[in-house]
Amino acid sequence: MSAKQDSQKPKGFTDAEKAAMKERAQELKREARSKKDKEDGEKDLLTKIAEMPEPDRSMAARIHEIVKASAPTLTPKTWYGMPAYARDGKIVCFFQSAHKFEARYATFGFNDAAHLDEGAMWATSFALKELTGEVEAKISELVKKAVS
Image (cartoon, rainbow, N blue to C red; front, top):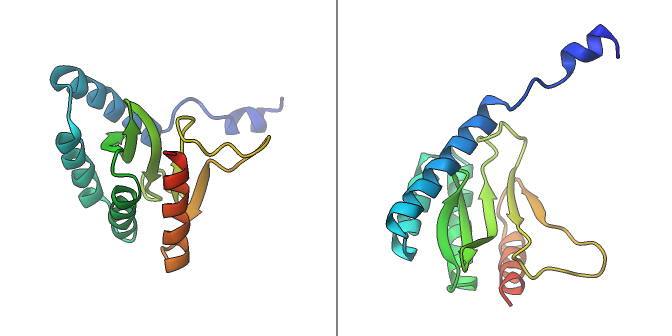
């Protein structure tokens, strides 16, 4: 490996990744102390959404409404400082702000607790630049399928 290639090699976690891990550790401590219920988790989630810059804040707020309407059995909470929705303590889906990791787009994703299996390969996350009626309908459809 050349000296130039070696200097471009990542030296560990980025500041944003370190901050996300610290947020997750704090979330776990709060959960262990209080055995958070749905109301407490939603309060934390809404606080995180309120801290986001636009347009992520509006997208996250609208996605929250869509997920609540599409899968009212999911428990809202935060996960690595992001809005997420769980079933039996396992994250099913989440929203990741573009701003959080200085990305070009926000992401709506699913974890392995989601029932989205479709053959040998399927999508587990989706880039979001804006929420149109068509995109909102697709999110609702995916969330419903994820909890089926």
